[in-house]
Length: 140
Length: 140
DNA sequence: TGTTGACCTTCCCATCGTGGGAAGGTGTAA
DNA sequence: TTACACCTTCCCACGATGGGAAGGTCAACA
Image (cartoon, rainbow over all chains, first blue to last red; front, side, top):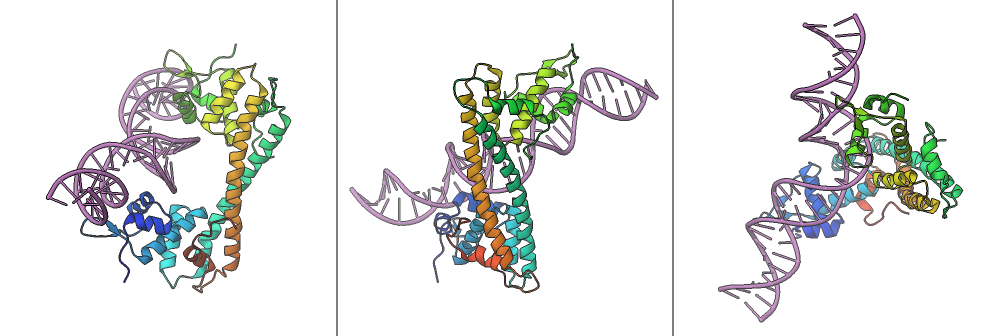
């Protein structure tokens, strides 16, 4: 018999900002919250659980769309775990692709920065690379 | 005595889309292009160089603001290479921070996906983690 | 009782880089 | 002439988040 929480308290308990809670509701990720007579949104224990779920999923980089899928799988106690894994696996391979791209950038930047003496002199391998290297992308 | 290029040709030669060329001009990254009598933008060799410079810098993940700094350093043949290196080093450390964050996500996701049998059965460590793990962020 | 301050509501705007597409002008070739 | 490919400007969209205005509500305290 817990008394309902205002949005600010739900935010505090879940780690999701009030601004974002309203936003998630507005895009249909969360069902519209119950309202008290004064039009304030009311949240219960289960709502806070859902908010934490969302926060955790965000911290793993899942998109809103994917979180919507995960949420409805979570709500369905009969879901096959294969469905969940598929969502996660797809996200993982997206992440891995971005990771590889960024790693290539970092590698190139480290080399360039290392090669640049970084003093008063004007000649600079960093600018030379940016200016020169025509099709040489961050890969290689 | 090369004849000037239309925006589409400049796009083709530089690898930067016409849409983006106009955008870069509109935000002041590029100086307004010359216009022919029919109001078409005209681009010369040097302009195409600048566009390629921008494209290469984008492919290394530099922001528009940083590219603006790099461009003006590039245009100034007297710049100290230290200024360039500082811009690049700041960007590198931003990248490294994001990289570490993503690597943590990937590590966690791999573990979860590995632990999930991913078949018909409904029990799923991925959902359990999202639902349960309260403050356990993607680190660790 | 009245006031104050902290909360809540909705609504619009900004970020960042990119693209889609409309409505209209221009240039070229058949 | 007619078609087609290009150009112009202008507005809108994405994804996730936040800022802030204008106004309503509630609790506590003098």
